[in-house]
Length: 86
Image 1 (cartoon, rainbow, N blue to C red):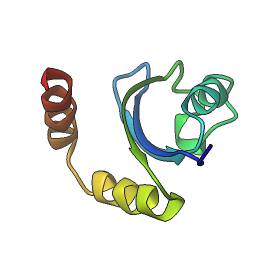
Image 2: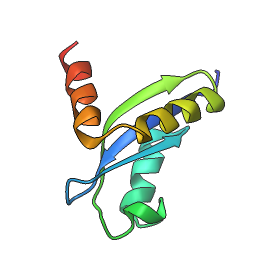
Image 3: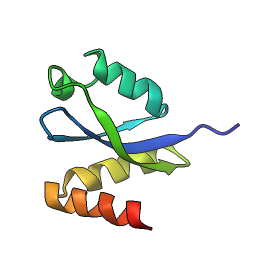
């Protein structure tokens, strides 16, 4: 089974968005919620992964992560809504 790589957006309790990379979405969400994930999300939990994209390689997922991080919050939310409505 090939490895899966994901770029994801998580919403923190305060509504702030965090974009990251992982190869296991469930484990990453649990890590964020235990305060062991990214420094940015510590103390901002619980977090909920509200969006993700799957990629065949880590490098492709990380390129997409960088692209998403350059978006504004309204652009990220619009991207999420459009995807949910497809």
